[in-house]
Length: 488
Image (cartoon, rainbow, N blue to C red; front, side):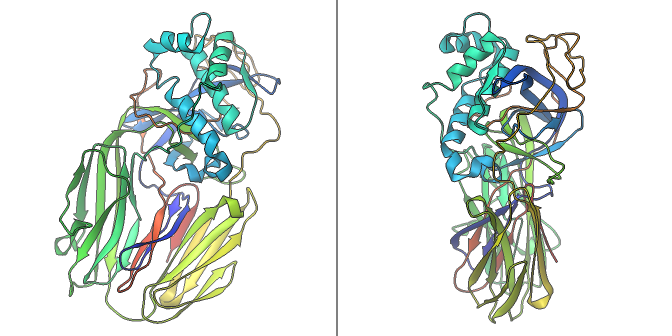
């Protein structure tokens, strides 16, 4: 997700900007693996498809996910890369999805793999399941329950134990968990700029880790220092990290023009309920959106750049934010200089932005349509925002998938549309496989042992702030998710 914030001085203006981007960033990125712990699920009474728990690997661990985007397929043999993101970057971010997201979080927190394999008998008893509840049953029942809330589908497992679990998870026992889980690690925005003699920022940190290490690097690192909101030097954060912890880069007056990089790193179990988006998203080529069900302990990192330069004149920056409720992308332009700036938003209009002010324009975009917005201004300023508006859950055709026996025990791949010759505990397909839809739980419990343990990196999508105050200007830019923004 591309998140961009504009800071003028120090305090936050009550406007965020967030768009997904195709560039690596904070949090976790992971690659889908050719295994699916699954059983058959009938969607709206139609031909059964495989539904269950996915495995994705990171460079030093793995995560488990369910699907929350049933009408888009995923090819589990293709090595699709996913990145961690916020709810607002997915269908869960809509105002009308708050209750559904809460229900999905509860499901994730109260079913497999947050409930360990050895504790499935207890879950079966609580859910009134008659007979043995296997991991395959639990995965299929959980996915089917999630689909009810993520996609509005009547998804019924063909296995009786899986169906009984599904019925329990969608019953009145599900009270919902409204809070969105913390990102594994996010340092926002990706960049700030300003003038010497000011504290550049704020940089905002959010993390599920109990300890975050901080460092400043670059040719000018010895001339500046990282400080907290009270001006005290900071080299790390310990204990539960407070939400939206703010840090600044103190650049003394008279410091020559330069730049430095702020780095954050941590080890953490990623909270269940985080959304994962496929990278390289386009209308014709993308994989279904996932939601995190479990995680091993992973190493995560993020970085942000700060630059400073003396001088006068207009000093502009812009941010963009997808607004699903308004069917478009809102572009905001701030001027932290001391002269008025004429800025062109294309498509859109020309804006005159006075010193210390912010102007916005909504660029309408149709659902599932690509957009390419260019912002140009004084001193050669250019920034481009590109992406796909993907706000709504499709409610059209029911996907078709690979039929497979209920209680499988072998991992032999079966072509799509062909029954597996041998039952498999981890059903694997060689073609696009529809998967269950999921929302977001809040747990940080370690992952049950049901898959591999290799990996890739993780990416967190966190919206930046739009900051306006008197005095010198500090500009903030953030990239994340399935949209991109480029500045020249």
